Every structure is written in structure tokens, then in C-alpha cells.
Image 1 (tube, rainbow, N blue to C red):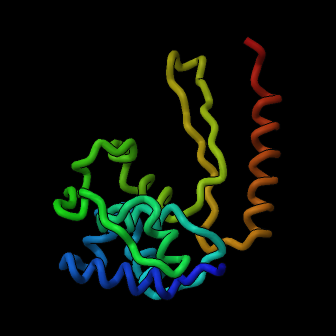
Image 2: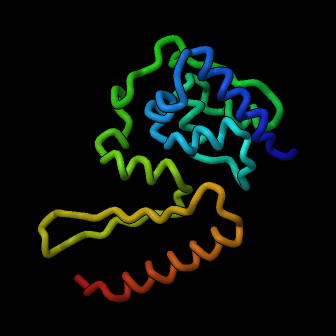
Length: 163
């Protein structure tokens, strides 16, 4: 069955309006950009189910499977979060401690993979690398990004001294 992005957009807009939120408020609460909210509400076709859509659904109080259900022609179901939506930053979400710029970047793209680099010269410090592609990236663009990530990841591993 094909994904009905227009149906999802209408459901998101209707739920947002019922709560009384602006697009900006929904963007803040779901930690995505207003542009992403506009694209979702506008029914912009995407090649796959997105993390941003799940975040928006969660902010609206939908259960985790609701976005997929709406894309497949069903209706969203609400969970306990619908009765008392949390204020932005009030949850124990792992992303809450990240900068706004990093949260926006993560919300705006599809995470391909991730790596943790230890920085032995700096003591116990580490760096987290997360390659992203735009949510509307084609399958060819995603494949090319994965190939580049693999190349860089292998190159990095080959350059690290053996400890």
C-alpha cells in the first residue's frame, strides 16, 4: 500500500488545530523545524516514513504506531500524552541536553548511522558522529551518502593507532 502523505498532513493539521497550537508551537514541542511542519501538513510526498513525522505525532499525543496507521489509511490513536502535553524541554528525552542547532539538524534529516570516536589525547572525551541525509532524499542519494560514510568510516578506522 502506498503512503498517503496528504492524509497524514490533514491529520496533523487537524490535531494541531484541536489543541490550539501554531505551527511554531508544534515545531518547538516536536523539536523539528517549522519548514518540516509545513511540509508534513502540506502533504509533501516522501520516499519513506520519517523520524520527524514520528516526533510530530508524539508531540500531538499520538501513540508510536499512529503515523504509520494514518499513512496506511487509518486514524491516529492517542496515548496519555494527549491529555497533558509536556512543555518543550520538560521530558527526560536524551536530546534535551543537546544544543538547539544539533536538535534541529537531527530532526531535519534521516540518520544513516553513527560512530563514537574516543579522543585518547584529551583524556576520557569522545565525539559522536551522526551522518544525516535530507528527509526527502531519493534512494540514490541515500545510497551515495551511505557509500561515502562507509568510505570515511573505514578511512578513519585505518588511521587510528592501535592501542
